[in-house]
Length: 352
Image (cartoon, rainbow, N blue to C red):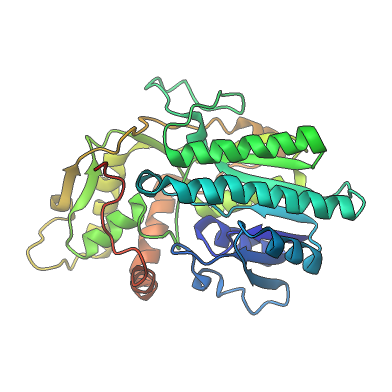
């Protein structure tokens, strides 16, 4: 299958690109190479005869039309998005322009291409989204997000993704565009841009910087190893039922403070030689002002994708986080290079 993947130089997108090439698919990686994207993320497959790269912005409709006609893909995997909640609080306009207007452009470019080529039944438009569109859950562990959970976004980021989800469903209902959607829980793993929680913990600890914990740190997230997510996404684009939505979760509900302490314990074993003045990594934990509108709990019911597409995560949080910590320890030069750009590790999302 020839897949046009937007955002293929980003964190989740690059995992999809690497896996798809390994499975024998052709990939057209369309990425604007904004601050969080890095072509090093796909360097391991960039020499493949089945890999193609186009630097283009999904806000540029003309560029998208040209790419569709040039490569004539069998499917689209739309991953390109602004994705950091704190950054959306500081500058929501970029999230509307990319996540809403950009998705509109992708839908229209795909629809134009699909119609011009006789509406092939095998074509798929796979929209990749987030569980944050559902809002926040109560503390009751029996309550989880399902595919029928009403939308209740609480941040500019989640509102922009909810908007894009609605557009995709509308293009299916109105125009018949063959779409499939997925909503995932929090991802972690190799190549994660260091403004997100888990790489911040690892890199700050190694640099003897304060490890920021928002509020009391009792916010609960369902952690999904990125390579497990990529596997689920490929299964969905290949075998998902048209018009359906699939929730993808890691079955790992953990409080943020426990994530921090787990990583500190792993670093005690894997990086025992600490910066001067540091006896234990946990002494770097610093509680800071909570994020405005911070959701308390996310948890995914992933039974549908298991029952219909036979997917479940391979990694537990314990195995996945050890792999992740080791990856960062072994790829310090990558970390330095991505932090040499626009992002310097500063706190984002504080209301002024």
